Length: 77
Image (cartoon, rainbow, N blue to C red; front, side):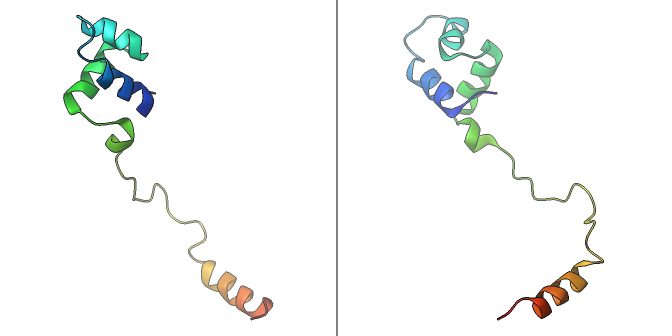
């Protein structure tokens, strides 16, 4: 996994070496990964997709109303 600092180093040294594999090696990544970030022009933290969907059904969906009621009765205001 490539970090933001590696990609920043890649961007900073972009015009200082002749070949892409040299640039990628100095930044600590593969040439394919370097090409990907040079083409996109963005950092890895900016490329992450938002994961906002459920991966499995909620196991406590049926029990949650009982738990809320129990906590309201048990805890002082």
